[in-house]
Amino acid sequence: MGKTLFEKVWDAHAVRQLANGQTQLLIGTHLIHEVTSPQAFAMLRDLGLKVKFPRRTFATVDHIVPTDKFEEPYADPLADAMIKELRKNCAQFGVTFFDRSTGRQGIVHIIGPELGITQPGTTIACGDSHTSTHGAFGAIAFGIGTTQVRDVLATQTMAIGKLKVRRINVDGHLRPGVYAKDVILHIIRKLGVNGGTGFAYEYGGEVFDRFSMEERMTVCNMSIEGGARVGYVNPDQKTFDFLNGRPYSPKGADWNKAVERWKSFASDRDATYDDVVRFKAEDIEPTVTWGINPGQAVFVSENIPTLAEVPESDKAITQEALEHMKFEPGSPIKGKKIDVAFLGSCTNGRLSDFQEAAKFLQGHKVAPGVKAIAVPGSQVVAILCHDLGIDKIFQEAGFEWRDAGCSMCLAMNPDKLVGDQLCASSSNRNFKGRQGSVTGRTLLMSPVMVVAAAVTGKVADPREVFHS
Image 1 (cartoon, helix red, strand yellow):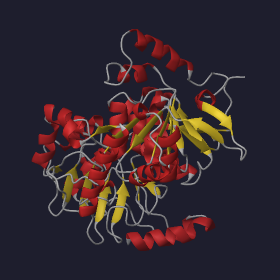
Image 2 (cartoon, rainbow, N blue to C red):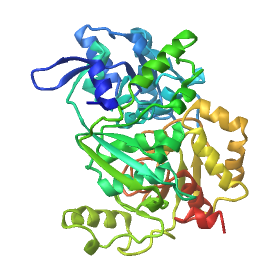
Image 3 (tube, rainbow, N blue to C red):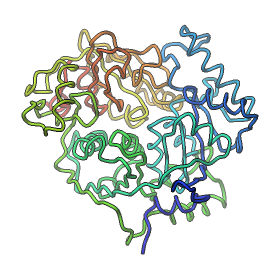
């Protein structure tokens, strides 16, 4: 009987079965950043331990960096202390650190693939829940907590229970104006924010076959928002073409050997799954969240649900969301006035995101009263955007063009909402307080829908804004 990619990678990295039923799993690549690693390094020092395989660990700084200021010290003393602590830890333990001075700094889930560190058939761990992003390359990638960061630093292994595998097929053709972000928001809306608990999601079907690697990353990135700790796509020629020539990709004769090995990890045709779910691409429209979790989403043409329209089990969270968002039940999501437009994050801060958004933004102006910021996911993305003139298109439209970082995706740097501002955001979480104000409100959407909202000053259907 055939195996899934998940089973093959798991079996190839299993060290032993533990008494509690978990598996001690070898972690091929460990990615760290400034937020969840300091305590882990401190525990290593307390225990007198070293990093087991420093060459398998890579560090960057992303969460806390100001995107409008490069020089140090930072105004926030805690942020300033964190980057210095990471710098010190990497130097002491021999870990490669993509500091801001290297030209390779950026969000951890963007620089891994960008540098060729993320490779098919491997296991990857990082102290960040959106580590599932790396599954776009056929890797099994886990978000882990600080204690597990310590474990991986000390042993290059971690204890974890084996997941079931759900195959999610999306077949057909996406309609114009519908993007990878709409696909994953639709999947989460239909399967629920807890629907993937205990599962790894294997994405496939005609839409994923056609998707670029960056589109696959967008979908895998948000697997965790649907409860799935792991999301992946089987590696194919697009995967290999993307990785070929990257700084950490195999070179010369090793490249051909690596490709043959990577191909062998793809799920077998006769693999069996614990569950299979199918979606038709034609059924998906531009999608936007209206509530306080990514599953509370509607098509831009739909109305915000009323309490009478949701299952009894969802009424409490629906009521809480309506009160926080200050939305009238049953009212259209389209036309809601926004205060802020944010384009960036590990979900949608890559070159193709800015290219697609710039294509529609060119010649338009940000609406009066809207604060609009564009934040490349990495220094490499920023350079490529500059070379293509994309940064100028955003600036001429009225966007602030910033340095690489997590920025307004989360509230750990100076980019924050103020009061109850409503933000059209290409990020991945719309939890209360996520963007820095306890009363701030977040609407998740695709990059093109963000620029449509920026130029109209309200939630808008990009197909109407840019094709009228």
